[in-house]
Image (tube, rainbow, N blue to C red; front, side, top):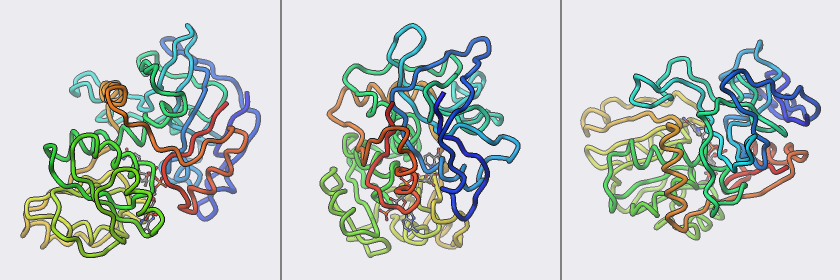
Length: 322
Ligand SMILES: NC(=O)c1ccc[n+]([C@@H]2O[C@H](COP(=O)([O-])OP(=O)(O)OC[C@H]3O[C@@H](n4cnc5c(N)ncnc54)[C@H](OP(=O)(O)O)[C@@H]3O)[C@@H](O)[C@H]2O)c1
């Protein structure tokens, strides 16, 4: 089958590790099913894999892609949950399984004609979502959903700051946060992305690092080092940073004096459970919220999407179709 794979680790030039071409068909073990992929979405995770972050050389080559929507062997339209793990005994949360993995880490991912996953990882696709829209949900939108509605500790009407407005998770935070009744403020390095964030529903948009008119209840962090100091300064006393990514670097100064003196919380968040993915699908079905897609490309043109993500030239999700 045709597939997009990571062939090697290439820390400085991730696109040099990208291969497009033939790959063996999936051979699903007992209890697994094969899904015919109709659409798959790109995440920064795929760029990290090309750089060799979070994967060991003995796993390569591996098919990239965490997210997909497609059709199962019985003809049902499905969304593929990206987390492979055991939720039993962990409150149904497979992300807490120490041996969990995401598709494309241990098992081949979704940038292919077909992908094999455990049967329990399939979630029905709502009829009101296209395959392209549904393919955005399993990583970026699920991560944003958990950050906002499970980890932030906020009630509707609270103010959240989203750092780095243009990213896949960030645009999901804007759309879901607004629909959930939060006041959503955003930062971006780009004036054009700030304007687009306002069009998407953000209440106010600020240049990265600039002073805010008042302090916020929570900050949603995926940028990391470049925005961390600003995130700490943006919070009201007792406020909370929910962190799920560190695109610009993972080791900023902790500024512990600020953390304890202002009694701030720093909470980590990763992906979400299958049940949360199912509730997220229902949330979209119940609202007018639809994922913001920057561009949709045939899988054979995947290199174009990777290049745009590597250079930060995106506003929303990149989707590959078949
Ligand atoms: N823990 C999890 O489960 C999980 C799930 C999904 C994603 N993540 C992580 O979250 C991060 C974002 O993922 P994504 O797929 O949304 O990536 P993405 O679409 O590539 O988003 C990157 C965004 O980060 C901002 N940014 C990048 N470098 C920056 C810098 N030096 N200074 C300021 N802002 C910068 C940019 O915002 P502006 O250009 O608007 O300033 C850009 O829009 C990645 O690190 C990813 O690995 C983690």
